[in-house]
Amino acid sequence: MGTNAKEILIGIDGSGSMLGHARASDASRWLSLLQSINLSTQTQGLSARAYRIGAGTAQALNSESVTAARNPCFFQGCAPFPAVASSLQTLWEVNAPAGATPLRLLVSDLEVNQNDISTLIGAIRTDLSKGASAGILALKLPFEGQVFDASGKPVFSGKLDRPVYLLATGNAVQVREVLEEIRKNMALKGVSSQQLSILDAQSEPKTLTINSATLIPQTIGRSGEPLRLGGNTYNPSSHSQYRFAKLRDGSTGIALATIQPWSGGVTRPDLGLVKLERIQLSPNDSTDPSGISLKSMSVAGSNLRLELEIPPSAPAGAIRATIPRGSLPEQWWIEWDKDDPKATNAKEKTEGLLLLMTTLGQQVQAQSPNKAPAAALCFAFQHI
Image (cartoon, rainbow, N blue to C red; front, side, top):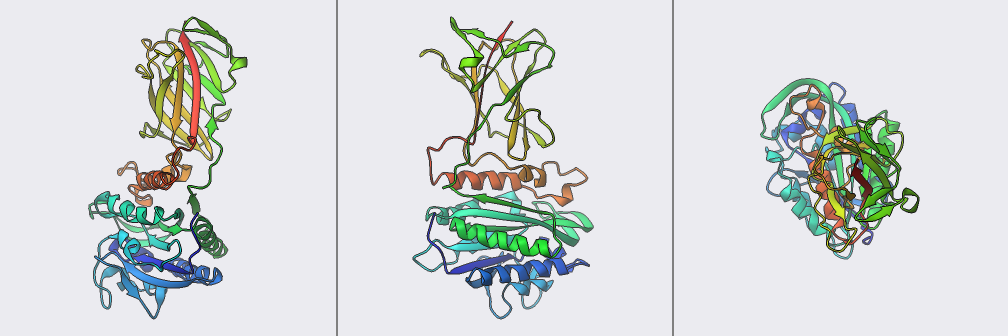
């Protein structure tokens, strides 16, 4: 879990993509965030060192601390602030006091240069190896100005609410307390669009398992009946952790879900987060899924739905779909991620957010390997 720190290192992203928050007609929300950060550190009994982030090294802020970022010049690069890019990793390069897990807090839109998160993740890994956990508080605040893509090209100019993220690493309890205190303060000031995620290697929520299996199309085939596989008969009543299905000609696949009925949520095509494998019913069986593939993944709150395509040539058998601990995205990660730059609401989203969050989750969990997966959905099928 890591030991408690007495000091917090705070970094404010000084890149031009953040300027619209300080220039918004309702910039009071931006100032409220900066003030809430100060208040949170004080109520947690922490001393603070603040930095402007984005140059080759972190630039210390002295007299005004984080509230210096209320000045548009903080992002424009006018006196007394030089122009910077988005070298967000420099906060994790600041030396922290020895003897405790460093506590760091980055305020940024997380729009890194060329959408390359490798340097940022590499820097954060150093603290993770010392027992740090991670957390992120996401808010949408008034913004007025230009929105840029990952290459620095303007893609929108005007007024809207844009995401701001507070990415924290450190002792899991301290990370949660600091972020929850800021969230509470911002809610009291009228900011309702907030999301909070805590990535902690020590916590281990119960593995998601299958609740229902629905044939696609639903009217072609049967479910819940015994199956004859590899010369043996398998009965659903003896294998409650599985769902059983018989596919007829015209069946294209099956939808697995952790809750029934399924409703709402957000859906994406295969994100490469799900592993499909055959369960060996005899020692010589292959684990290859034999053409079975993931068509889409849906997340609704803490529930998961996977739609699989099963070709007629796929041999009968038992299949396991797993998502490793740390790789299961939360619903808001998908909703706030900019997957389609041409979508009308793309300007309100963050490019590369889903990649950053799943990678960070994987890195946190890598500090405590050999855990049960986040999700394991099993089913058995045959063609009839």
